[in-house]
Length: 161
Image 1 (tube, rainbow, N blue to C red):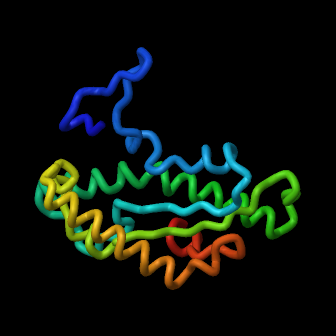
Image 2 (tube, rainbow, N blue to C red):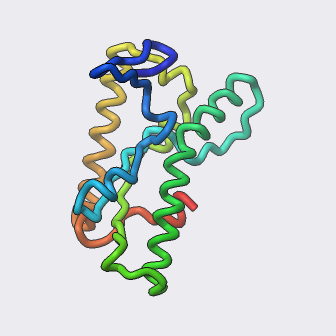
Image 3 (cartoon, rainbow, N blue to C red):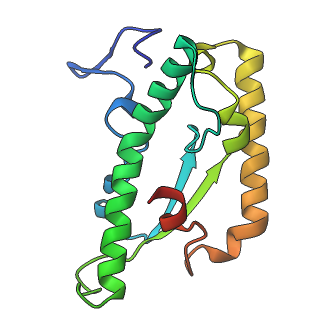
């Protein structure tokens, strides 16, 4: 639940807010909670924004982007570090997972949107986002389906480091 729109959701006596404030998306449960070495990240926040923010609204948009990306960037840097240590022989690959990272995003479109778009619950807007997501997923599958189970389709060093 988005704190700006809704109160916390209570489940079994525990209250929950949007997890994006702590992990967006949280990667480590996928590492430790599964046997899979493939991780598919669906990025909804842009990493690269070309323009320097100048107005108060633009600065708030940038703060939002940075805060929602910070945990993902931190986790991906840790994954990149472990991968490098495995590749250099400093860590035993039998003891550590060498992950295959995949990523689907709509970076260009998402970079055009301000923080107010995250508060837009209009049905047509949500359907537009769903359609954009489907298009991006189909494009990714056409290009990278053969990479799953074989190699990363995302260059972690280029994208996240």
